[in-house]
Image (cartoon, rainbow over all chains, first blue to last red; front, side, top):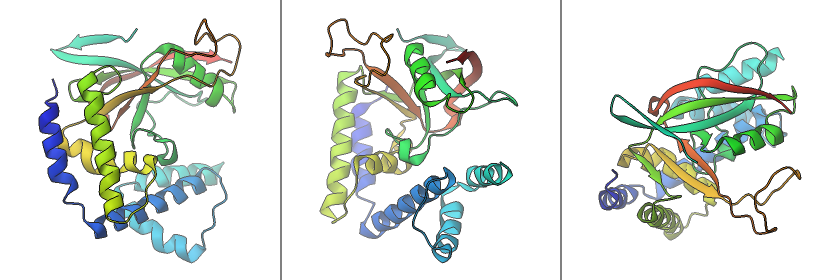
Length: 79
Length: 182
């Protein structure tokens, strides 16, 4: 059984730790991964190669998407 | 009807995961939803009723092969927030979403609801002990005549209920259940 009051108390303590810099960093990460996901789905996205090369290692290394991104990339390249 | 079981004193929820048929082999684990489709946050999505797993297969997961597969999973239920059927959980769920939106906005950040769900699934829910969320919407997109969402149209009263599970470790079993031709 979940203790909903404790969950809320823990939420309040946690959310206040996310300052403006962290939120900016997370939004940037989120936008980048959306771009990558669309790219891997075959959608056209407006990203320069330089931008992709700069951003993708950050997304991959910081947030643990290396395996799935590489798998998808390999699959699509093979197809 | 939502199905449950108990194994070794662990309460398990049955979930249905629909994917395109694969010629080579069946999956041994569910596929994580794309971030842009992750309406309750980043994770593994399951229907709680087989009916909607079939609709999803017919509508979305059979375009390449004409077939779809439904997998059946046993999901550890203990720490899942049931915002679909538990009144207190629903209002806490709402409150946390709204206060998260407010947190972003007071710091001058514009976010979408999908972003908020992704943020919560990665930064909040697992850290406060929530392993997944059950929620629903109403099936307003009736694509074919053979689906009965309501006997008095257009009022559709059936919930389309899904559970998102954030971590594979909370999926106890995952096996192929049905292979269907559209």
